[in-house]
Image 1 (spheres, rainbow, N blue to C red):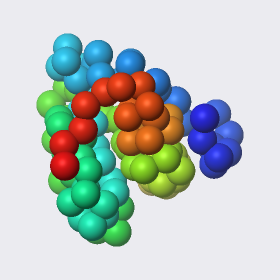
Image 2 (cartoon, rainbow, N blue to C red):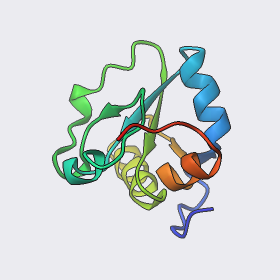
Image 3 (cartoon, one colour):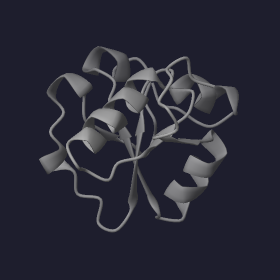
Length: 110
């Protein structure tokens, strides 16, 4: 799904899995795209934390699994790996990003 090889260290979650997890209150979707991207189109229930200024200390998952997302899944996988290298437990992303989300027919806001 993603062009970035994360060596199996990042779990690729499908849009359907992520949407179900959000609905059930199990997943916190964190959109790491930049403001110029989220201004055009956004996920309805995502926390927006741009990768350029990302600070993991600002994450408050409140018992939910953190799942990163971006446009296509490359940046979200890279960020997951970088945070794992810092000893943080973030190992899941929305494979294919907002492109896959829309292809699955899930809603966005503009």
